[in-house]
Amino acid sequence: MTYRVPTLKDLPQVAQLVAQELSHNIICFQGEMGAGKTTFIKALVKELGSNDDVTSPTFALVNEYVTQDYKKIFHFDFYRIEDEEEALDIGLEDYLDSGNICLIEWPNKITNFVPDNHQTISIEILEDGSRQITVNK
Image (cartoon, rainbow, N blue to C red; front, side, top):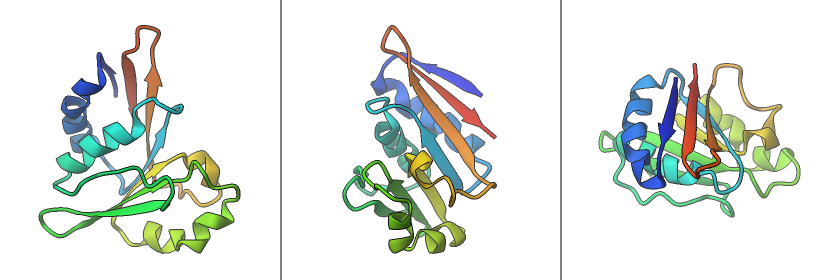
């Protein structure tokens, strides 16, 4: 499914639709720097039932959020890692095997560890500054 988002302020409406489309607990986010991945994840985490403050885990590598029904959501940002072994150092495999929702920014940095059973959300900046969000099953 593909959505066109005129401005970043419109991301929450699309996040609501995307939340209903999620078919896997591991979701990889593709898009260039500044495309709106973290902004979209903020809206998505809210739609998934968390009132936690969502921030980019660029330096921490992973942030944990809790939903209103006490389920965990893990948010990863691997932009700054230089070697995918760094992801193992934080216990990536345990997170991925936990059954909890795992939202991964920059999955291309950990390609050997992304399981086959994942979903991809791509965010592309169009010429007019709008975004195109594509959800792959």
